[in-house]
Image (cartoon, rainbow, N blue to C red):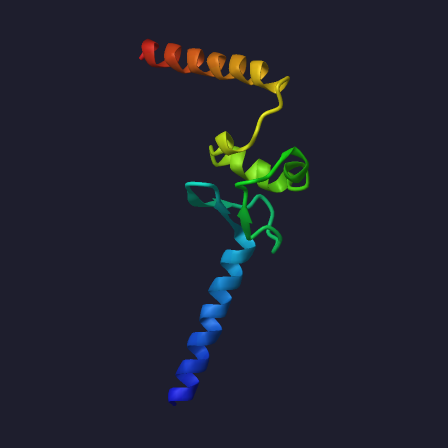
Length: 105
């Protein structure tokens, strides 16, 4: 009976570990560790260390970039110089819309 309980426990633990691996990214930066939900169920990129990634490495992982943006963690993605002013304007417009909606209430 003890072996059966142990086998069921190990099997259950393996199932939970596989589900977690397929549905979440574990991301490590120079000072943070955090978990981000994947956009697509797959086993790739279950653990990523983005401390020393350059633009070419980021271009190899578009799903991770999308997951970080949707989770509100886009500050870890390096921006190209041409994108920075456009994103700044969009951020300011978003803040202005948010402020005006709170003032109406």
